[in-house]
Amino acid sequence: MWWPPWLAAWLAWAAGAGAGRPAPLCGSGGLCRAPPGPNASHPAPSHCPRQRGAAELCAWPLSSESLLDTFPVDVTQENYVRNVRNCIFSIVYPTPFKSRVRLVAVSKEVLENILDLDISVKGTSDFLQFVSGGKVILGSVPLAHRHGERWELQLKGSGKTPYSRNGDGRAVLRSSVREFLCSEAMHYLGIPTSRAASLVVSDDDVWRDQFYNGNIKKERGAVVLRLAKSWFRIGSLEILAYSGELDLQRRLLDFIIQEHFPSIAMNDSNRYLEFFSTVVSETANLIALWMSVGFAHGVCNTDNFSLLSLTIDYGPFGFMESYDPNFVPNTSDDERRYKIGNQANVGLFNLNKLLQALKPLLDPRQKQLASQILEGYGERYYIRFTELFKTKLGLPGENEDDNYLIAFLLKLMEDTKADFTMTFRQLSEITEDQLKELHIPEEFWALQDLGKHKLFSEWVTMYLLRLNRNKGDSDTKRRTRMTTVNPRYILRNWMAESAVQKANLNDFSEVQLLQQILQHPFQRQQAAEKAGYSLRPPAWAKDLKVTTDNC
Image (tube, rainbow, N blue to C red):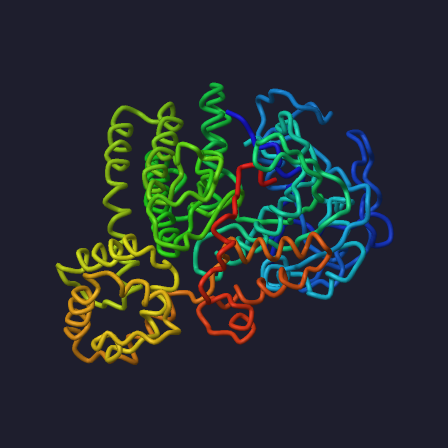
């Protein structure tokens, strides 16, 4: 089991109303410089009062106590790559950038609604130093994960950890822009995901062989402050089972259940079985949701599968443009293992790995029941997939022909290479009369592509008959329903690439524009239309490549 070289070098529990004691800052409202060293003493707390909507970091409630009180921490505090046992975390201070740092973007919603910070805090030097890894807050212990309401924070790209292997622990601007934008975009699409609070860029040189062709290029280092309710993954339990650390595994599993699965009683002897059943069900739901927006995760291994069924670790990813079950977002995936049409199967593979990790903690009866639960994964996924696509087509109620209607459409889309997102969106906007007459206006370019199929008229006839069976429904109601679930804007690769290219020249306008547009993906927006975000993708977009070397 390996841990990604970019694994964030800082983790803390942040919070709303129910967090531990307020986290005072060093000196008179300042921050502690990183790294202070393993034996550094803590400066005296300042007297900045704790408050909601804090405009200063000194008033921000931040604590690592819950983690430190629950789990053993690596006794070795020197930061070098090594095998680590008998702990969950290692104390690792961020490695500050040597050059100037700039704040590229922040998420106002994350800052204000999750972190209880006033948006004005983004203009302070303390905030910039904190989110770039230059300084840490007293009261938060920098942790690297061996891999009220509380959230775990990570600074992705803030330096090496004991789990970095041969990596430098840095992230580059290219991948950081993509992660910041996509994690927020997925949230507003209604997909469970980690969030991104800020994006910082430096002038430090980071060298990357992006396409594994020996062409090493200089890029700029960047850091994303990202957060989730928990960063524990299937791999977090898998590594403990593999190394035989069963007592620690049991402690970790009980902690996860107690903190994040409130419906499971801690005194229930079947709590691990109930936990597994929930993860199986929620993973099926998550991947069906990915499919409903055409999202493909490029590296779906157990280290990138959240135990809370969140979308995490945005390395190589992509939103499918032309509908293609063989779409692969990661061009270094030569075997096409993580193609979009295989993601449900990869989910099953990872859940089986989770089951293997849990088996030492289960009795024979529970093992048999867990296997039966896993066998039901496919049906759960198929049911959820069908529900979502019926909703995308505006089909209320039940009809035995609905599955065929969905499959028929997807086959037409595959044959004509119709755009996935805009086909469903334009079906949401076109009137039934226009469909009936097969009169497709020019603005509905995706439907025009679909209309070239010889069987398109047959599908339209079936679709309209199905819609007309809904008594009390109307075409206006149908279009309203459909436009609330079929986005007009997604983070297409060409849009992200355009923003990255400008950002490399210190023009962050498109990063900020996309951030604003993607907060309202279902609403037509003048700025988005002007930028061409709902038009046919440019020809050069077909040549874009994204690889695993995205950090």
